[in-house]
Length: 610
Ligand code: FES
Image (cartoon, rainbow, N blue to C red):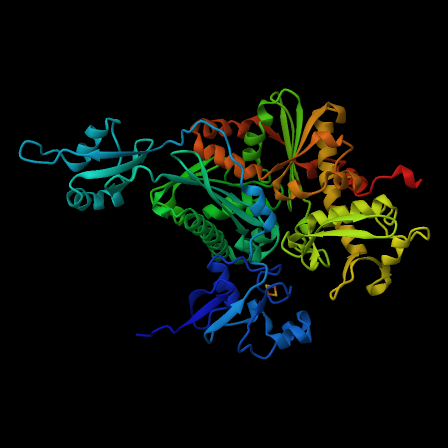
């Protein structure tokens, strides 16, 4: 018999201890464990993002590590994760695994909704069997509960006889829709919980709620471990195209492990046992939902963009591998199309667009931006590829909304003020900082309508415009030990991202036949939508010129909608109707989409500069 050798892997700063098989690739091992390893190349050794610190015993650097890391970093023990193979015990530290500060701050909101989760628990003192009472155990339950015919899963039936007799026939039964979920000795009726989960392409968010009281007990967010396979849904689908079934399983395992990590933290924070989580609701874009359920999303990424699944699903947790009660029910929210998913139906449910009298606009800003426009009479939806610039990708000094990110910028004729997440030394620029930089530079005329840098002799701040690589101009954002620039290419990426959103909004207004003035409210959804400066959004022309008072940051509406469905069966029924009520239109099929997109890439004129 061959005995596989294993090694201890210790992850700092949590001092988390894992066991790994000899010869395994460290990158793939950690992704499988649910660690969100930063990567844009899927572990091919080409992007340089999967940096890891090996404080002891780092091996001689490879060619690729020499390209992506400085001499000083190599000297200090920095290496690339995807190049390491497990051939010894390792102690390592991965940066940026910490949860997004902003996502965490945003999540904690309380909902007021009548409690009707559909999960029920009852403590029973059952009559004991005897010569006069030879009823089977299951009949004993049914008659005592008086809830009609109950179905019992095999796993529960197997433990019933011992549990009943050892517990003197005093038991707690949990059921939903006449299906028994669990039996426990004694009275555990107080322990009844549910989780709402939002699977974002970038971030996983989880909320633990008491199904007895509706109180939110814990909130957790972390990066989606699938990020290790690429920043956007297209790169994840590409992985499935290339690797087939193995790639699909790998991505499913990564997201499931990530969600299980979220559940584990939620349970630890609230001192709750995962077996007492009986219900989960899950929102996410269509690709995320397909990958989570192990359904091949391959047909979503090419015309005519067909998903396998649009309707909702209810599956046992056991089947999906979620660490909660194995018979607990996982409710997957319905979608609208291949690119407008359950995160958007959840957002509509929460913001009540489908019941509004006046026209409302809903914009969820992500790597794909989803746009919904209308009211109770008609709702139109489309999706537009904003790209990962707002997540910090493809921006030279870009980063996520993590400590050290430049989050806001104020600029005057001579100077600029930076707001840094966590107040430390600036390390890079996150999405809201990018939009502010664009907006402020447009405001003072250092970026023109076409997005080109230009100096103005009358402005001392112009001195921050330097010549960079290949003679292109760039703007010095911070000149600390590690200077940070906004490059001309970064401005192009910003133009592409904001142009995609603006063109989607312009076309939606036209298709619905409404003017700007008729729009009563504009919701900016998602963590990003809540932190971005509304003034800067208008200054760069990402949205048409709505009055500021109409633009409302709405937070993580996907998570809020999932919570509504968790706590109230009526809301679960209500969301089903959105699949039919919302009309999807495909932007790329419209003849003039390219023209509108090109026009939308321009920055607005700022009249005081003329
Ligand atoms: S270099 Fe891209 S994941 Fe390692």
